[in-house]
Image (cartoon, rainbow, N blue to C red; front, side, top):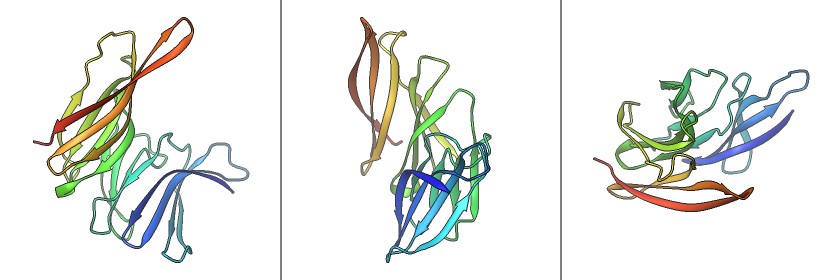
Length: 188
């Protein structure tokens, strides 16, 4: 088996790696989740079907739990929460107009999922969920020029705000140019 890690999160005294694995005799990559204890010993490995999603991300909401986005073979699942024993607690269905890129967990079990609308020149968006997977609000970022491509990269929580960073790409004379952006959003 050949595997590639795409994200890493620490939950209590365990490190959890998610990504993709290539299994001999299988055509498509499978989603892979590996759990390593504090001594570096593999204590769990899970193959979650094929084909694997791209851009798998993970975060910890606390209390030993795990959040996963773009993980598993089910294209109908965008976001999932698992308990300390890695059993599924809930999932959020995917949307044809939202492709997630980054996942962040914050205070009061708030969850931010950044991504883009691939059908609209990759217009960036952020979705804020509560700890039960209920969507609290969503915000799409307005592009200054509809021909540009807006790409979110990361999100992080402050005590009462969310910060999202990304870049806007445009093509000028066959060369790609990018401008970084950072946006601060109120949580309520």
